[in-house]
Length: 397
Image 1 (cartoon, helix red, strand yellow):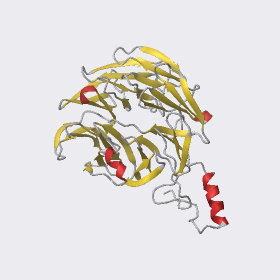
Image 2 (cartoon, one colour):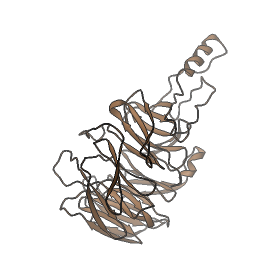
Image 3 (cartoon, rainbow, N blue to C red):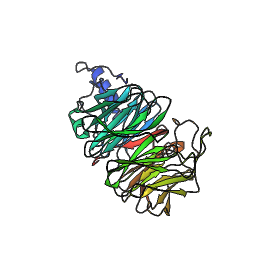
Image 4 (spheres, one colour):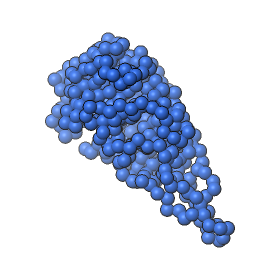
């Protein structure tokens, strides 16, 4: 838990003036939930269209247009960050559970979904689903309810056994969530509005990740392909290899095609693949595309028109036509890099919002904004420390 080290306000003495001066010099530094900077009557400056980047020891909050550093929030441990689904908030996965950060206001709200090993955060159809791996608990809520500073009313479901899973709620109230144990994951099931099981598929070994495509088709990855749920039915799409793992995906409402990674070496300590997968959820067809460069699990995104985007270790964003698999262009973004062996270690990360791609460059402590239409770099900033994860607010989901 992050606590304030600032002293409480005293009477109007020279000491009070000295404390106030010191606070002004902090440049908008914020504290976490439960701690109040009572020495300063001025609230933190509101950050416009905030981005949030993690670093070893905390979070940076940046203006999404200027890339100006709005503030720094101390938060120890390895933390992950995801959009909450509205204009102001992000979800921070900490060692104690999911915490809600008002990124625009640079402060934790006090809303927390406690539990060991907080995992995937999924936004779909105006709802946000949290999956806690250590308990198997799923929490679903409307992110519009976060503005009140209290935990919004929502839906809860607990998996039969705890596992590294994922869940997504559909427009009709159905909840798709994964099946598995700590040792073995096997597939997915679908629940109605009352959490009664209505569909099940157990032919997806190693199930991991989720993405939604046009017409609300949902794909989850398997170690031998992908499992699609569409129009009330499951369809399995087999990989062309006996072991063809699609563990990370990115979807778009503008396309029926889901972008996925693709790995074939089951024994590798770390496979650095050069091929990506394109899965058409309408035809249940899978296409592989060789990029000529490797990438990481933080490299996949989608553009405003449904373009498939992959940040390669060659330093370029590869823009791929999801229908044909053609690589339309390569946009220079960062210097060449190599994926580290430890998945928690920093590497360049791609985050896309609207027509702008944000790319971190940890080796240079840098963050860049790139216009996807023109390929032009519209801004860059150098931060005090190297960043790890990168995300921001995303409304309209």
